[in-house]
Amino acid sequence: MNTDLSTGRPSLREAAYTELRSLLLTGELPADRRLVESRLTHMLGVSRTPLREALVRLAADGLVTREQDGYYPSRPDLSQLRDLYELRITLELRGISRAIENPSFQHDIDALLELRETWRGFREEPPTPSPDIVLLDEDFHLILSTASGNEAIADALRSVNTRIRRIRMYDYLTADRVWATIVEHLEILDLVIGDELPAALTAMHKHVGASYDVVEERAVRAIAAHALGRPLPS
Image (cartoon, rainbow, N blue to C red; front, side):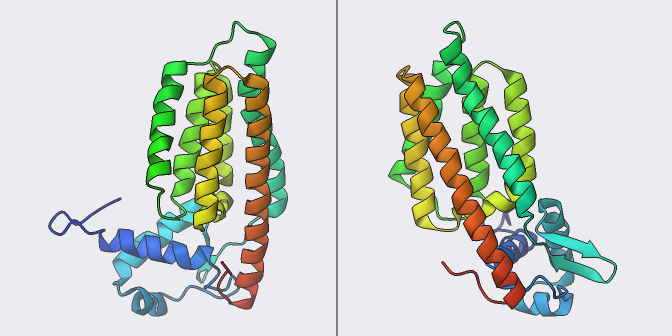
């Protein structure tokens, strides 16, 4: 996060980006209405320059779309989400199943022990619900995949994560989902480290599948909220 070094607070452009992203994810900005700069600068309390920088970043995130007359909130593509999640599940499970099929494929236990300590820290002090938690989740799954010893699988997973990140941000807007993610990650790590790989495979399948169900539900609600110009219910 970019900060003002004199105050330690987020910079205006970072604050504008964060607040505007939150408004988009919660459906408070209707998808069929242009994002008018004068209205947004007043709403966010910033000038046009940090607002425009925030809009460029949000376009890169896939949260807004630039048309000839300006920016508009994007709508989630649920058909693409289903296809990409199917691929994600395949990649996630393969990292574990290959070690079941061939015992010579050993996980990097040191990397997993370090990862477990990180997530135990999150269990002690859970992060505040935020779209940014998707990056922590991606990091968890990439480290676990890399630890399986097949870098090609990790590279493919990295690519899929980038493409579904825009919609997966909806998974981390409530404290219960953040907590469930922490608990499930630690369960998976304990099973892999303890060489209980069939149980780890089952836990991973359940974890990723549950994440998809939640993301799809919240994305559907977001589409409806955008269309009606109402905030996304918690």
